[in-house]
Length: 221
Image 1 (tube, rainbow, N blue to C red):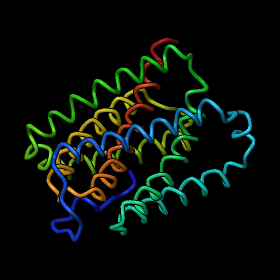
Image 2 (image 1 turned 45 degrees about the vertical axis):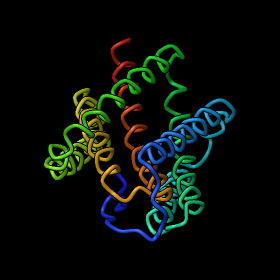
Image 3 (image 1 turned 180 degrees about the vertical axis):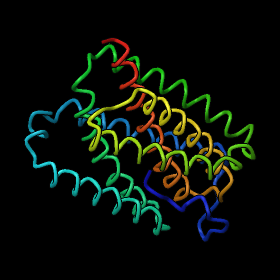
Image 4 (image 1 turned 90 degrees about the horizontal axis):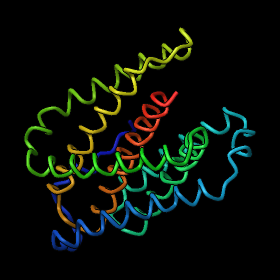
């Protein structure tokens, strides 16, 4: 998981908005990201993406993501933060394009529906039990790091992929959604912070979606 330090903010020079406006902005920014992803899946040929040299693709992917995270982490200007958000959304959309091309549309739709329901539930839990999610943040980080290392070892050394890995990552990102949503509502409620919070939560949701899709796809085989 790419690191973001926006939730450590305790003061701001920007104008404070109401909680309703703040959460609305987060929702709109998330919807914008999902719309861009949908357009990428709809209009960019997966076969063309697969022809790109893997090294060039992944170097460009990480460069764009880290640059985007740098922008929305460091900037206090909503426009710059939104630009950084798009530098994250586009490469994530390309990955989503490649992954969903392997599955039937009805399965993708089912994964979207499950992800939406789980996201809403975890957001509600993040608001109701913020202290609980705060208490497990270190556990989430360590768990995700261990699972990623195991997954990489299985893929590149053992040439296998265990189903439990997908379940573990899905549960971890459920925790991150609740954790990040709770933290998003505990920092100064400015437009810039709303955009930055949406960017962090967007990455949680997309990672959860991809794992749910893989779990559903394996169960249909």
